[in-house]
Length: 157
Image (cartoon, rainbow, N blue to C red; front, side, top):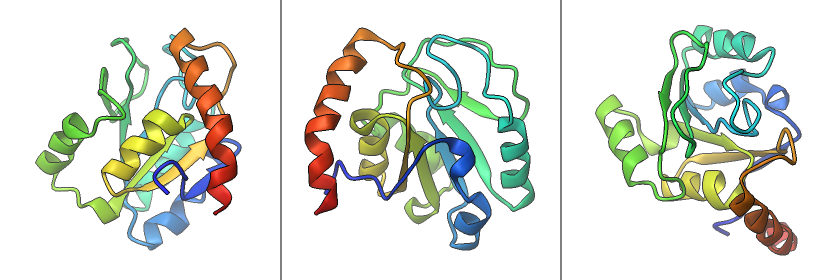
């Protein structure tokens, strides 16, 4: 099912990145708002730099893709793609093609089914849904959270 993530975890720290890399999943796309940082914030989660270091040491790459407005993040060595147009995949697909990334290498990680998981499915990527960091979010997102509740029982099929 297109709305069903391949994995569901509480938070980014719960993901075994080394295991995924051993399985050939080497390109990690992270959502920002309510996944790596709070909505409208420029501060990255404490501990993400260690995760990033682990990913890079194991041979992986990271891209942050957000529908949010551009802002400065204090994170060296990570490309950030603002206003990415999720769930539509054409902008991300272009970036991935330029980088030579294959679909089976991609892991899409985010807190929303109707943007993050859906764009991951359109990219034929492995998808991981995390719980949102906060209930404070864009008002339109609250509508999609309601739709997530409706689709959740279908994930068990």
